[in-house]
Image (cartoon, rainbow, N blue to C red; front, side):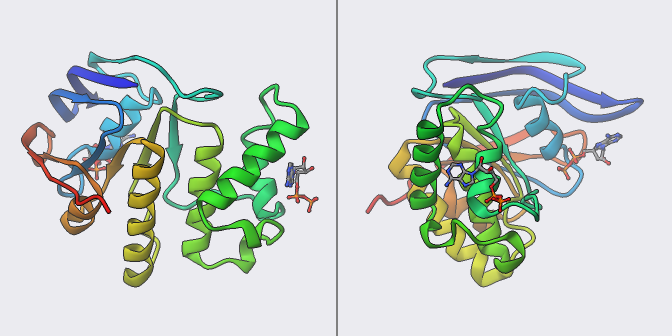
Length: 221
Ligand code: ADP
Ligand code: ADP
């Protein structure tokens, strides 16, 4: 799916958070959105995801969605947002239960995303038994289970230690390349952005306006 953000500005009451953002995200592209704290990154991500209506401008999405897609734009939470009383498989199942999927299809999707995220041995574990890195793998698995066209991530690794961040970043990178995922990844960490993204978009200090766009060639192995 192709996303076209045009002329997007946003104000919270009198406070101008974003000014005149134009940005196009192509299918299969991993875009990192960087910039200092308060420059409007989360605001822009919420607007892209349709959770927030911009004061001005629009976001349009066009093109094909993956087969079996239940939610074209899917958000990955920073704090994982797992239900403690449900197992790993149960937490993933949760996002599928509102949809008319057969039990067999639901189980197949759960198996698939567990395998994709290296969680097959943890399907019956409860969140409290998992490290932070494992919990965020569940967060990603849960998002992938709906077969999104675009994954929206707001500092998904910020709750994790440095070593786990690097490990997960490289796992995400390989996973996205394998699945042809389109993703928008918000971070204030340039190293993370460069390590993951095809393109890094920097927002200026508030009100966020686009500063520069670099295309970064990510080695494919
Ligand atoms: P970033 O993600 O880059 O840190 P945000 O998009 O969270 O930036 O915030 C941009 C600006 O808008 C900040 O100054 C923040 O305080 C303000 N802001 C964010 N959310 C709200 C809100 N719900 N109400 C009022 N101001 C907000
Ligand atoms: P409990 O420990 O109470 O059984 P779980 O968290 O394991 O709860 O599961 C909650 C719900 O998630 C189950 O009722 C089931 O519908 C669904 N679920 C759990 N695991 C799977 C699975 N492997 N395949 C399909 N659905 C599952």
